[in-house]
Length: 514
Image (cartoon, rainbow, N blue to C red; front, side, top):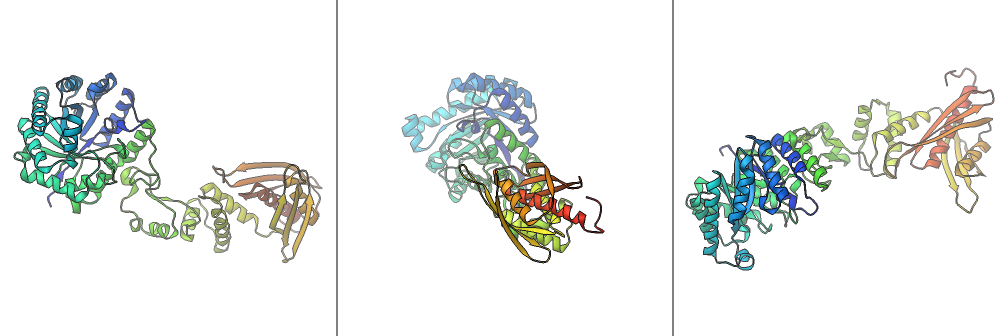
């Protein structure tokens, strides 16, 4: 299959803006237009000038801004005033295009336009001729072509080309088509329409049945050489063909489509985020190419494969769409390989025994949290290091608290010799009760001088880290730290850690540094 080029016609600023709540002002449209130029689109449909003064101004300003970088297109109905206003708005554009047309399905002719097919063809021809009197580049749209009678559609398109249309747009306006049928429709145009070789066939697909991208690509396979699409697939109802999806499909599968585009793929993510920010329409996390999870891996099997060789589970290098790389999301489903890899990236090359302790703690935490962050891992490593050579290890802590009620706590400590010691106490609060219970087991004089709690990570399920300082009888200060998703447990860990350090310092020949 020979390699040729498919033009990318972006209608984010026109059809995309028709998404409920996505209205943009002229400045915002101009900002997106600048990014579309960086992205490398061939045509920017800047607006529908007759619809409002704001749209007129947007088309005028974008035409002046874009220069030779892209064709600037303005929409109109097959109405003389629409076309004249579109031409006025495009006066600033170096490469102007008027996009005019009329409905072609029986539903549109009978229920919306209430005219015959012959009358529709007459209006279409008059509109194209008028548009050609203003600009050399005229695109004709056959609205609702996806539901039109093919024979009538062929007549309409043939007449539009004879009148001077340089591009013929075949829209699946209602998202009714499916790939085989839509591809056959495009193929039928190439076979039955006289003069079709003198115009570019364009496809404009909606996503009502979730097939906009598939239908557009079927059109390309059948001979269409322009795709009309929007960034993030925004648009009326279920949206339009997503620019990023068709661009990457054509980029990744030249063996299937045999065509190229002018899209600079590394600008895709930046463009997506800009449009999302300006329109306020959030991109769903599992959205192809630009969703937050598009290159994220949480399954242990997938993570292991990606870490060994990215292509095992990724057909697109995330760098190609403007991302820094794949994302390994640490969850309860993550494997040992992913955990070890992330720890090493954070600078922790742990011996096997210590890694095992961290891994056990990681699994325990991951069962309680949706996602384990880097700060969590750092806290877990610190917690693991604090449990080495403990005089007393905190095995269990239970507490009750409330108002009214008396805060009480029971703790279990395990000695280095393996002896299990359990005791209980009450206090002014749950932390006080826990500390008093620990003191009943660990009989060492000390004074708590500082108590600090911090959230290690974001979110309601954040890991909490407690830092305390205790003063020994001889005035020395010992710091203890503990991390856990339960602040009371973290407090018990921190206190036990501080007391262990105090006790170790009292052992003859113990290291002096504290």
